Figure 1 (tube, chains in turn yellow, blue):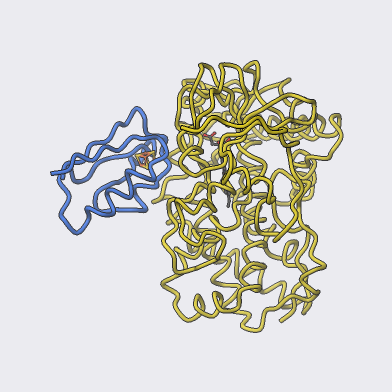
Figure 2 (cartoon, protein in one colour; figure 1 turned 90 degrees about the vertical axis):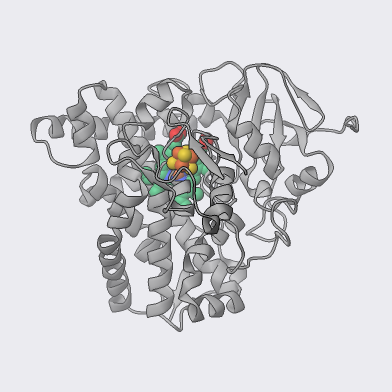
Length: 399
Length: 65
Ligand code: HEM
Ligand code: SF4
């Protein structure tokens, strides 16, 4: 075992300095030189950054690390994240048994068989938005015409939310997930979303249907606030993530024409290609936050009870020990061991749905628009470095 | 090869069903893992090992031999 050299801790987060699809080079250097290393957060608090694939999996599956945002020492990467401690928590930031109680009320809704059965409906939605984009003519912004509306409409149908309100919830989500938004704005966006879902839950109480919100209400086991905050988590996590993954995947494939040609020629590669894109792009880039509840030794370091840790999915997914030639996008590679959806009991609840949406959206887009290309130089694309979910702000395309 | 699953630990991710639907399923009521075949055929062994490796909750145990 080597003893860690005391080095000046990195300020977190670092700025991206190379390829827009790759994590900041400082994080990748940490993975090679000191895979469990100290960083300094915005308020001067020290925190551990976990960068290797094996260590990220180990921490996320270890009961000695808590995901409870209220636990002393829980790491926050900015003031607005910290401000969210006040108020009703969603199960993504709770530990078992509270977390499992809420998650288990939803696991049946997102199980493989249920999401596979949604394929024809999702195909219809994808075709409809693509028809409209084509009708309006080339060029178009792929984010607003295609990538964002598809998962938004799908999650609305599942939850029982009226899609006509999409501007309202998309705008609030954008503020809630903006790392640079003012503390008050983030708090207000969250409260407005929870109030909106509380009102919806109340309507479902009086006029029940088969939607997820209605069935959560009908169980009678949850408070109105619990139903509303759970609904908010699903609504926000359900559209921003897949939307960004769709647009960023499109850009990545347009940048790698050989990979795109291969994928178009061999439709059997589709499912694996989506896993590879999830690995390669790892859109949750600022690290999954946890706090140690006991002393833990990892990578030659002692993480003390009460220390915060950030699990870096993007560097884990480019760890050469887990994926050979990891910085290369290879649609034919075996990449299902990626951690783009996290790991441990909080691993993404919506992953079966995200997979089906991504498979259908990308297959349909590249099949129906064989001449799809960027409508601006690659260098002009604006990336979402300021957001919790990475991606592009807009993606001008022509065909 | 013998496979066992721990339904208490399972978080219903569905990763095992994607890996080997012949061996793993999810219960209609709660989305929690159901083992279909405790002694899978040789052709599935590699995928069963992969399922145990990707299971986020550590709910799958493979007994080799
Ligand atoms: C490509 C798309 C997606 C990506 C990359 C993604 C990523 C993630 C990650 C990394 C986590 C773990 C967070 C943590 O452990 O701290 C997570 C949790 C979660 N995701 Fe997703 N997600 C995606 C799509 C979706 C969709 C479509 C839904 C739909 C409802 C969803 C709902 C959730 C929920 C509810 C959780 C919390 C699970 C828990 O704490 O038990 N996600 N997601
Ligand atoms: S992979 Fe593990 S957690 Fe996911 S459904 Fe199967 S047994 Fe449960």
